[in-house]
Length: 388
Image 1 (cartoon, rainbow, N blue to C red):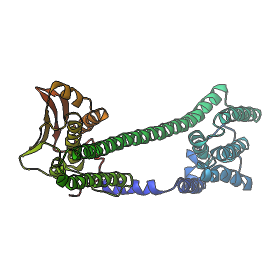
Image 2: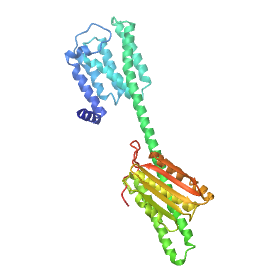
Image 3: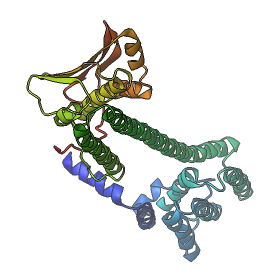
Image 4: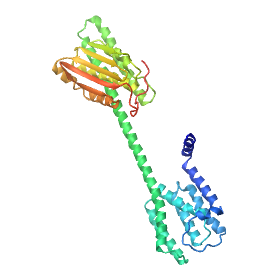
C-alpha cells in the first residue's frame, strides 16, 4: 500500500501535457505491433487492402494528435477523425492505433470549451458523410450497424462531458468553500476587534471618569493605568495583524486573567479552582474573551458593583462564571451587550460547549462550559499561544 501511495503521488505530479505525450507515444508504438491489430476498431467491414506509405501516414495522423488532446481537444479530435475515416474508407489493415479515436472523443468532451456546443453537430454531420461513403464503397453494414457505431462513439463523448461537469462542480465547490472560510474568518476577526477595542476603550473611559473624583496624589496612578490599557489594546491589535499576516503572534489566555481583573476602579474578585491543564489556544482565547466581555459590560452598565470571576479547571471541562451584583435595571442593561455576547455564544458553540448569559437573583451572570479539547472536526483558527 505505501508503494501504491507513492506511485499515485508521482503520477499526480506529472503534468497533463506530459501524460498526453506519453499516451501518444504508447499508442503510436502499439499501432505497429502486428499482434495487437485484433484490438483495433473496424468500420464498414470492407475487404482490407495492402498498406503502404499512405497507410503509415494515416496511422500516425490518428495517434500523434493525442499529444495535444488536452491543450487543443477539438483540433486533435478533428485530425484523428479525418485520418481514421480515410483509413477505413481506403480499407487499410486494422491497427490498434484506431483506438486513438476513442481517446480523442473523450478528450473533446472533457476539455473542449469554445466549440463545446458546435462540435457534436459537426461530428455527427461528418459521421453521416462517412457512413454514406462507406455504403458507396460497397460496405455490407446496414443502418442498424451504423446506429450502433454512432452510439458507442457518443458514449465516449458523454463520458468526457461527465468528467468535465464533475470537474467544474468540484471547482465551484472549492470556490464556495474558500468564500465561506473567508467570510467566517472576517466574522471572527470582527469579533476580535469588538472584544479588544470595546474592552480597553471602556476601561480607559471609566478610569478617566474616576480620576476626576480622586485626590490629586492618586491621579498619576490612574493615568499610568490608562496608559497601560492603551498599550494592552495596541498589543492585542498587533496580535490580530499577526493573525492576518500568519506570523504566529501571541494570543491572550488564561494566564492573563489576573492582569485583566486587577485594574483600578474595579471591584472584581478572581477565584480559580483546580489545576489549570494544557489547553488549546482557541479554548484559552475564548475563555479570556468571555471574562473580558463580561467585565466590560459590568464597567459600562454596573460601574462599582461587585463582580466575581470564577474559573474551574477540570480534566475534561473548563467552567467559567462571571457574576455581577446589582439592581434589576443594571441586570437588564448588562444583557444588552450587543454583538459581544452573541459573538461569545458563537465561539463557545464552535468549540462544542454551552454558553448562557442572563439575570440571576439581584444581578447578572455569564457562564460557559467548554470542553478541555477542541473536537477533531473543528480546526483551530488561532496560532499556537506563547505565554505572555
